[in-house]
Amino acid sequence: MLMRFRCAAAVLLVVLLLGIGLRAAQATASVSGLVLDQTGAAVSAARVELAQGDRVILTVATDSSGRYRGEGLQPNEYTVRITAPGFQSAARRVNVGASGNVVADFRLDLPALQENVVVSAEQLRAEVEA
Image (cartoon, rainbow, N blue to C red; front, top):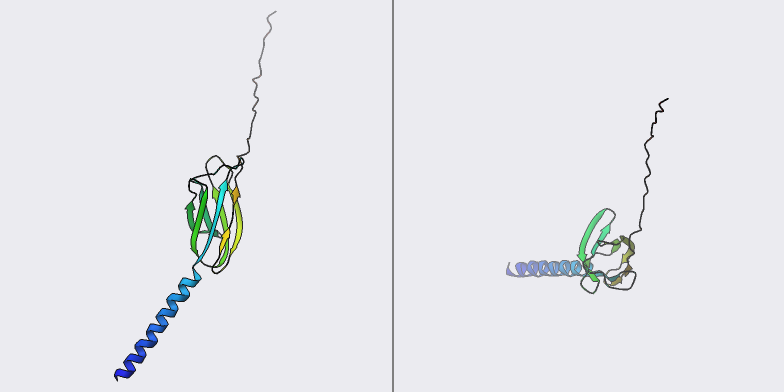
């Protein structure tokens, strides 16, 4: 009876350890990069979203050097979206492998200036006295 209990406990331990090992191996991928402006200066505090379709999986921010890193990702295709005040947003698709790091650097553009000119006039009505 004691022998069966030990065998069952050993099998259960092996199954648990294999499950933990497989889970850890699946979530070791990452995406990192550098976010710069048009002049090559770092863009700090930019919002970086890693998404699958419309679902945001992870959100991080760039540091003072413009660097970001999103870790613990499952192997899959992600869209990396960058937004920062005063800049146009940018996005790029990346394929993340099982245990690698994908580098996705961005150079943000200033927003396009839009100028609207509105011209209006009132019709003047003049009466002539005779």
